[in-house]
Length: 161
Image (cartoon, rainbow, N blue to C red; front, side, top):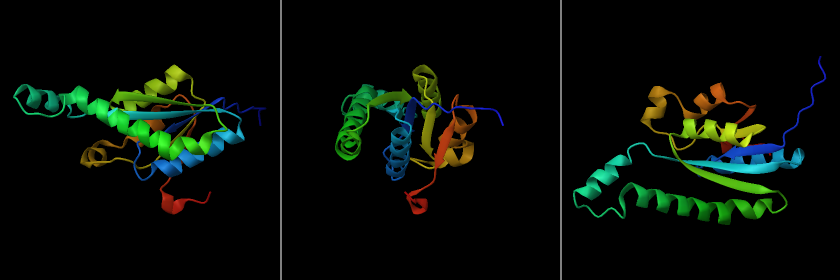
């Protein structure tokens, strides 16, 4: 076997703040601590269907700022959840969070490349819908195309931390 040193300088956790995010985050934190790594929290606000908000706003419906207003509110809510529910547990780590808007698999893959992520920790389930069942999940697409190793985390019912 070749001498292969694993160097996980930057461990990323892909979280969507669904029920599966906490267990995914816990595994990412464990990896970051084990490898003395920086932890990068990645979140993508799915923009599928949001253009309809702008169309309805243009027709006179009060939707709180259309697509831009919605995205601003969702990001603020997610930043609050991150600060309240996640960050207190990782005060001993160097942590950064990135928020993007777009198609989750595309944005996650871009972030992995741009940031030079060494290891991605990602759940197998999240904020799913019928489209995910029909066209393949975000996780499946990221697993197939990620430029780094991906640690797949199953749901909380499988947790053994």
